[in-house]
Length: 71
Image (cartoon, rainbow, N blue to C red):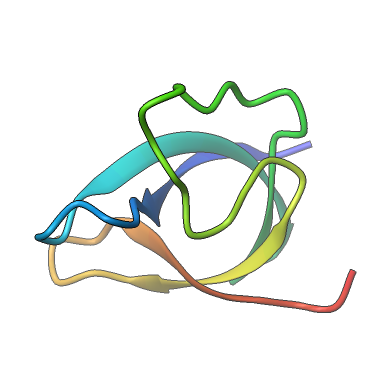
């Protein structure tokens, strides 16, 4: 298993805020967010624990979750 850090957008923040989360690589651009990831009670993640997401590279090279994929 290739575990990586990806970034998930926080919703309802008023500005773009991204949370680093652990995920497992399924393919070069698809990752599954750790099912046991703890979402802080004061945060709403765009994609939650266990979600499979497609990631794009940001301008600074970070993997950013951009959409869900079929599991």
